[in-house]
Length: 410
Image (cartoon, rainbow, N blue to C red; front, side, top):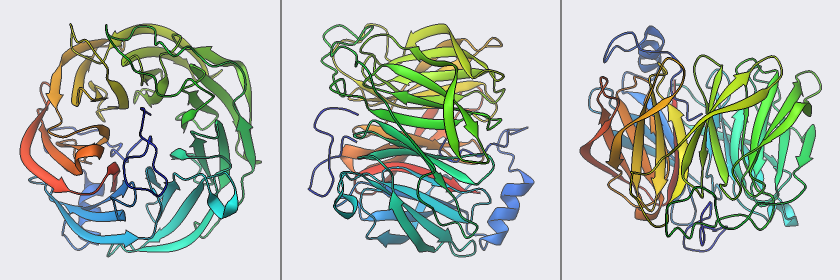
């Protein structure tokens, strides 16, 4: 998060893994058979995409079709009445969509909520299933367990994480487990930040910002921005409960503000983007214990940059060759090449052609890149150079109020 970015219902901007297409491409521009079948099932009009936005500037959840040849997004529908759906994700099989409602007043409580929808695969239409408590204020991240039976949620204001069971019809049940982050918080001056930085977005209290299962489903990692920690949990996939791993957490540089993680496709490496120091760290991941070991830390900003910027999103190409990180205020996408040992080498920075990229998405073919520019009310479209990995602006702007998250249905 960043200062003055909180919005539950008033105008302004809230302080507040995209379904990237896990199939690795074997050739430039090659569309996998599964993707071709999806296009055919959806009437041949392109792949469906959904965007969650902050309300009231954004109207709710938008439905788009993507032209796989040009990357163009065409709005097909709007599903209004969903408060602050700042993060959206799909259930296994792509027949359900789940959205955080980044609020802190659900049913008269101080908690936020999560909304569940059924997806009509032929039209993309969303039908509301139910809404449940997220068990903490301002939920900002969702991720389903590989079994498809549970949904993990991170609550920023609540400093908590919760496990929500997914019922057979796709609706959500009451939480089977809730963990509250407790303990000291980090300093307001981030270690490793650029000279002149005043980045200070959340070291007043614990703030859970991300939660994700490892590829095996045996462990769950979550980060707390305020505490400067990455937590590791062992997950009981029968009871839907979490217990501390052998090494329950690792400390991040004081004040750095860890925000999001991304697993390498090989499952043995994890990359962390910090919000306040704008750094990227590479960790070795032990799939037997859930433990992390720091290997490398680099800046997500250009050499010589001075001033304030906030890291927002990190993701890898499906083939694991490139890593991308979004910078807010600097308003850029950093591209890094990943070597055989998982190390990062900067390729370059690409302007997002907008203001405050809260996140980004890569289409299922791996050819196009989309930046959700929250403060300039537009999604911008880029073509990815499959040799260098860098995105190049296509000249396409997609107008949409306060976009936060774009995800592709395949």
